[in-house]
Amino acid sequence: MSELYEILEVEATATSSEIKKAYRKLALRYHPDKVTEDDREHAEHKFKELSNAYEILIDEEKRLQYDTYGTTDGTGADPRDYDFGGNPFDNYFGGGGAEYGNDDFYNFFQNMGGHGGHGVPNGKPRTRARTEDAEINVDVTLEDLFKGKVIRTTSTRNIICVTCKGSGAKKSAITKKCGICDGEGTVRKIKRMGPGLITQEYADCTTCSGTGKIYRTKDRCKKCTGTKVVEETKILEFEIVKGSKSGETIVLTRESDEYPGKETGDVKLTFNCKDHPVFTRKGDDLYAKFKIPLVDALCGFSKVFVKHLDGRGIQISTQPGKVIRPGDFIKVRNEGMPVKASSSGWFGGSSSKRGDLYFEMDIEFPKDNWYLEKNDVLKMKNLLPNDLQSKYDIQKQSVDSDSLPEANIDIITDFSIAKKDALPDYTEDTPKEEEPDYGYDAHRGQPECTQQ
Image (cartoon, rainbow, N blue to C red):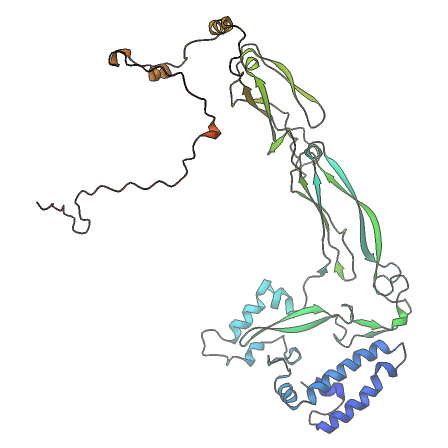
């Protein structure tokens, strides 16, 4: 708890005048304007330490708090005052009598992640830091997913400087141990979790950038100017395999920025398929709509329906007399999307399987008064069946004329054709029908008689 006194080189019992005298002496020695260019960086750091220590110890209230708790932030805990190999909760709990004692809280934090506090064994970082992943989003066409495509993009990233091998300094540079992290590269912080509950976490030291060493400004590497990294430009290739689906991601491992002491991140490309004017994809199948006149639906046809995604024309020929009805689908096997092969197989790259192609048929009926002569109507009646094929429909729609009183039949000639999308909307709420009152009282279970 005597660190601030050590910085000012005084005893913990020093008076205010002794603290002022020590500060003036050291401030004059380490003032950045009083040292050479080579020692300026170290002097600036030391001067900040002196000023911080003096500001706390010269203030009676802050000094009392520091002497009592080891800190002036009100938490009552200084990370340097704890031996984290033991149980820090002994300082807050009496060690018995309560339902949850000091060991319960200590074991809780020690078991987080199976290791020490915040998932680190013995309070030290367990895994290396990692640079950020680079995210790329591109739009592709359905043709690209059908035939496959290689996307090339120019990438500019940071790589470790080969001249200084990531140290940021010349080979002949004289390095010193960082005074902030004491050469560890990380600083330990105490985080307050609640009343009487604390935990520790580690972060890279910003003074030495996590290396634990500092050097003079003139010893910087000329190639990277002390940044430890230089820019590299290269071409990255992303292969979209045939049959890939929209929204998938291709990952190029370790192609993001490099930095000393950190694991290199990945470059991820996510592709999304734009809408196609003809085809709609469902799984590995393709769907398209096609309209034909009534005569083709009744008599058969042979037509090129569409241009496929690979440029081929797809011609459909039906047998004469094969009737196509509204809502029917023509299914063409193995003309859908390629089935993406699993990369876990022996050869892992290609697959000859394909989905199916479905044409949703729309029948266009002729306009009113389509015939040229009335005789054409008679010819059509003679050619087409005039009776229903289902006996059930015949029976359902047949009306016994004997049941009609004295042939009471209205002949309707004034009517209109209503389209399905023009029908009335019946989604409005309708009032519920009131339940009939049968004179029954549910509480008494006996019928009520109406008085006369």
